[in-house]
Length: 398
Length: 133
Image (cartoon, rainbow over all chains, first blue to last red; front, side):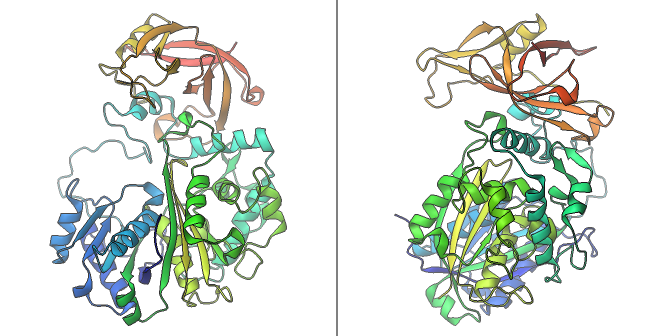
């Protein structure tokens, strides 16, 4: 069952995340095209080779997104995929592209996620509230009826309730959570593209930051910003002609379980567990075989629970694991070497793809100052909603 | 800024009608012997179409909670600290809840709670809040 590992990431383009956009607003279609052009340039492959696309929602068309993009790009495709997995969208695109390629449906697939604001129409009519985050306020949405009226919306509250339950069941050392943020900041200090480049952080800084929702503090939480990303996945033929070392997609797993964690069967057993098990089984490697992990990090608690549930340490021992390992690029367990979204920046749904890029750049030996020596295998996680949808990837160099 | 209110749907109306009478009524699936929340058209898991409405006490325990010191969204700007919780009903299902009549520092996981019906002024809606039992 699964992939043979014959499709590879061959190039990518990632904008430097920004707190406030420095350039003009661009339609998502324009960003889609521009990011894709840059990723193809990076791969050294022409647009004529592209015969597949994977996209998330675009602002300009609430339906027919793949067709609208294919038309706009002027590239007819054999594979027009719409991926709607929140923060897991990026990782979800990568395995879908690899699967289409191994089926022989497509040779080269663009996986692009714009993350800059798009222009508002001159006569913008009244929009719905823009504070809903991951929640849907539409009539008939369970969240509109049973979550939002109580203020249980967006992300902070529900993630805090996960952390609170974790603390009650296993104990939660705030210093371990803080160390995740600090180690990732150390990584960001070696990455000039990171939004927090040049801004050191200490455990005390994290512990002194204001409480958002018990037990999460400001510096446990990701800060949204702007950016965008495109990744090219291709078959072996194209990969051999590309300019960089191919990063083969050797295994994946996906698990989608609920929208609101109130309805989790067990709040502390996240869906990354079965997804990671599938991915490692498909790749035929052990946890100890990976040289790098890049774990979706909307909150520090997400990293802690992913380390446990993906099988890198026993359940309930995440804090101990974090305290006893160096998670930086020069450490014994490199994790989120780009800085993670916490310190690199979370450009909307493009943020999840930053972990794919982190792993790919490391395996291609072009990470820069934060290069991990002898990095050949990586584990990547994507997480959408509130631990709602999880994707695991195992990537490997030649 | 006004807080958003639920808009009952044809499927969920019996739940909201019961709350208006300060009663808690949720769905039950005889074929699976399971209680269901939130209201569904068919039973989750089996998709059985045997859901029926039954009145329950509304008693349960706190499964998890958070004290939000910063508002979760602009409509709650004047409502901090917000006492958000996941309540596990005696019958099994969990629901999202707001806690009232309790000091933030005394909230504990496992704490028994019971309904505190809140009739939203100038509306047809009663919200199901919870308080220590």
